[in-house]
Image (tube, rainbow, N blue to C red):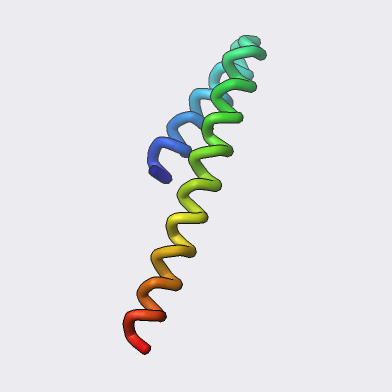
Length: 54
């Protein structure tokens, strides 16, 4: 999932450089959502591992 977030971020940067503002903002929004989903899943996984070990 982090790979997809980085991919959409790169697409947003490239689209922004070439002047495609709508595509750039949409790609940046998707990248941001995917990154936060990744963070939530990562934290949940860490907590579950700590609970299992205890």
